[in-house]
Image 1: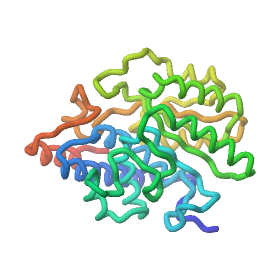
Image 2: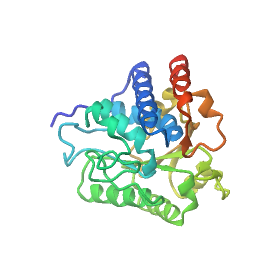
Image 3: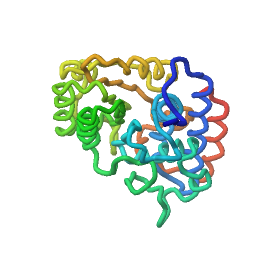
Image 4: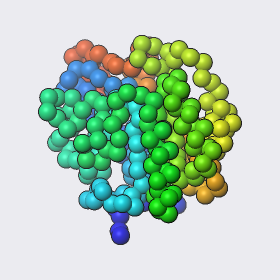
Length: 280
């Protein structure tokens, strides 16, 4: 079956960067309409989502239930603002629908629900995404499917015991069809991460994972890490992404509490200017 998107050997980094910038534009516009939101995380994860949906993920926007598709699981459901933007860019949902983000009766909730087209799991309470991804990867292996499972989760979720249980399971079962994208931005709801979880990369290796640690806002590094993660070597893959909340908008990059940002009406034009002037 022909698919619209599948991994290639040599993607155009410039095109992927352009997609990431478009995602960031959507994120700012969606946040502006409601005056607040998870804008900093949306800006930070834009590069990863661009690389996933326009390079690495094997899927068909016209047939989202295709059995042999790769799955992308967003464990940090409040990052949905960037996921909706990626969906609009990919043609999964209409661009005009982004205007409904966070409103009553909208399909585009501030945390993901699996009733929205393209969403694989509910991303509300944190700490469950990796466990579900391990189960899906096991299921695909039993089916003898070539489909892969990609799961994004956060360093905050590494404070949850269920995440470490899933890490142990993934390594024990040798799930080389599983790719974890660990967004390490150092923050949680009210400030900095509370529990000392470092060194994340070394701990994942000790659980039997192949691990790469990169600048999560470098498209070149993301593409290279995803390419390496295709290896069928009996080990699940983890890519530790060191991302910067608010990436692309310097004023937001400097905000100490960037988990849920409340923005003055006078600031939005400045944010738009900074993004357009920034080489991201």
